[in-house]
Image (cartoon, rainbow, N blue to C red; front, side, top):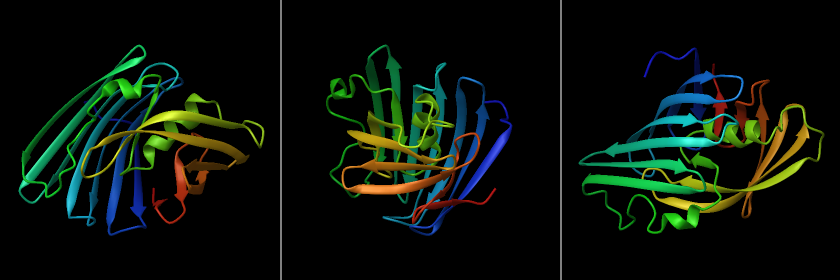
Length: 199
């Protein structure tokens, strides 16, 4: 992948680690690759590449996680209203959780992929749903393909995004809620208790 014009570095607040994303934000799409290094639940590195189609819907997402004696990879490719999920693994991860999803059909209707390890993927629904500059109170609930890290399980979930003000969007999923501070491009500046943008 060619060099990208913006580097985003987050300090991970929930655990020891960092998250860097190299991002090419275009008027109607986003290309990125990045790496997360974290100490929990086991020391690991997570590398990813992401492309969207026009309108910021995810087109492909490839994620690799690696730790002592093991490596896993999952690739999600969207075709129309369905997803192809390809996985591989080497070594012993120490968990019975397999990467990917047993039935990709459960991802029908999903347009966004949320990678647990990075705040970058919150930008996708924020941009796709037109939440930047929207009226306070504007709310959308969307189905999401949530990728757990480091296991790389793919789990269908629902997430809700609500505009609080020009700089704040409330994110919720299940019983979890966080008020995300975002910049003018929709990148997360502060994710309370989780990540803070350094540069």
